[in-house]
Length: 248
Image (cartoon, rainbow, N blue to C red):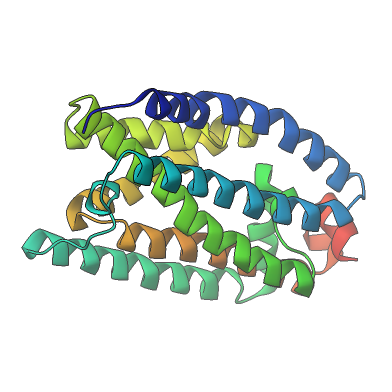
């Protein structure tokens, strides 16, 4: 794949410009939401959905303009033993996510613990039924759009474009994915970077984005639903002050 100037521009925007801009913007919104402006959460959900689909639309136009195929973007399912092993791993992860949700919302103690662990993303998690339903759409958007950008595009850019090995591309794209969550702070970057590496491994094993898309979607979906359940079923004295105030 011969790289075009548009590829370089999209790469810089994706791994550097957008994370820095989002860090300032989301931290400001987080402060306002935690101060009581909870109506801003729905606005933020709509903003995230809109911006991610615009980014994917730009990517699609670029891909078509340069005459590239779906396979180069990771949209054609692979075949072989490694591919099926990758799908099996993806299925196992999905089962574990479902079990985690069941365990973490099973009792008061676990729900309170979950709220304490939300950390830098507490402001982003849904608290009302309307927010939860919209967050489901955010989760689906993230699963599709972020995989197309951080696995599909970045892998193509690094491997086919720059000649980087597949496993190095997996590592570098995961670092970029972690940095894209700069607003969550160092621990959040580490956590999301690790998640990105798992998704990258699934991409390498299956040869397509379908398994990473499903796993990414369910990770976000279950996180939102766990938090919603915890916020609405945990007594204020057992939750963090900010979440207790919003849920009360």
